[in-house]
Image (cartoon, rainbow, N blue to C red; front, side, top):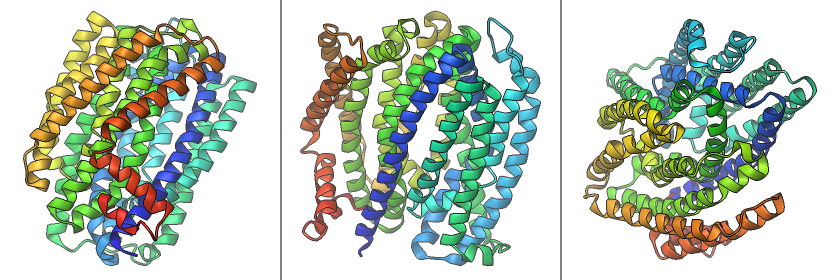
Length: 521
């Protein structure tokens, strides 16, 4: 089997397993969230969101090592250098044990400050106990991450996903049962903690089976001084990037809680959850391609890299149109049918979330190549600037527009910083060409999305779903229409041809083996 066919096969496995995991967890999360709201209430839902953000801020103590680690694995995996892989694993094992300890210490130091970020009408009992259980889940995950990252870098993330799918299924069902029978938040958190540990243990066992030489060389050290320097230089760069990225993603709920109230976090989180689940469909595809792109970067020339990027970018334009337009046109009706009119928020908030979702959609190929190239050393400070700008704008716009203002601030900060800076570096260093055509294609796609959203909103106002059946019919028409429009716009592009070629290659591997060359993955 050729290298190109192997990359296509592994990417396909990762995509299929990721899709199954996404569908299962999405359905379970909706059921779980519905039960959560009706048994514990919106304030506990907001509390859950705040815990998530606080712990995400703490998790930046990992310095972004997992990303730097995956990047350092690509070349030795391609060269089958077992000694170097064993030595790298030894380094990362020690690093992550230290990280787990640091997160535990800093997390405990944050306990006295919880009362300043949790604003509820009534005092929440056992607040510290809830937080400590959630903290334990984060700390325990860092004891296993280096083994799962090796599988991911080796284009075998489907193995990780299989264990997570089964574990999440059992864990969520038990959590739902606990909420219905005992309405106990502690039991809900403890179930997630226990199954998180069990899933990670099972993944570690599989990694040991796939790479038996890791146990034989358990104490091997990295003797190459230049390699050591490169590893820690990458870690230092990713640290700054990770801090900045965490501030982009994990401060919104905290600011909303302090400016508007914890209940507002719970209401907003329903809208964010739906956009995240829709976005995850695209993220699964690009996540399944990242390791293959890393292989392309390590083994192919600049023309091949650019061809892969062009195909991936066209693919993301199709997804951005379908996902963002469908979300914008359906979310209001979905919230009304799902949990009731009292949980609906303004059209301005929907527009703000849609804008952020759009940016996440169209930037997926860029982020994939960033991870595969390890380009953090060159973009870390622009991300830090963006994070600081986001923080300032969130407070200013949050006071003016409320929750929607905080969300708009994130989009403005991104546009003002890394959205234009990161492509310039990628194209110059790894593709050896200018990025004018790329920026033009972004503007053109954004205008198409705005036109379709505006037209759809005008038409959709004639029919508001009042039941699940009506919502299903409206969703089917909307998604089919968006798919037809945006695939029609891009079917002749590199992305459109890549989709057809890859489907043909999978359906008729002998007849269409050459089709895999389009994607080179």
